[in-house]
Image (cartoon, rainbow, N blue to C red; front, side):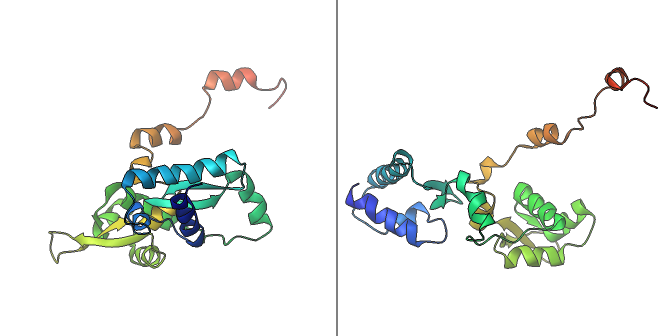
Length: 192
């Protein structure tokens, strides 16, 4: 591996969060963006070709060395890794609304959900999943919320464009009930 690839590998190994490209470029200001990308590719290929238990992934608007998916369950079972706290259904609903509609104000979220979301927003903000991204033009200039790089990291996304499209969600959530004629034809004989 080149010395630049080794430097990037060391920085990525030491970091507990994804490191954005611009921060990686600060490690060696004399290297061009193309040289940095080539070094990142070199590190990724090294882990892939050598069969390591970790891999270099682009996630949360940055790069991070992570455990390969096939080993995650065993590590969690042995309780060797810190498990992120689970989000409540209310938090997930609010987070989805923010992710798809950002920037969005509290009143709009409450209108969509039909319930108050103050506590949920506070919790999501404390976890670093959302942040205030501006102020609205309406009465009182309400705070507007948007997702953070920690949101992308939590859901293993490189950028918001990787969120499922609304039409994909509609297909996934559609009821899978079989037609009535199929149900009657496949019912066991003598069943009442």
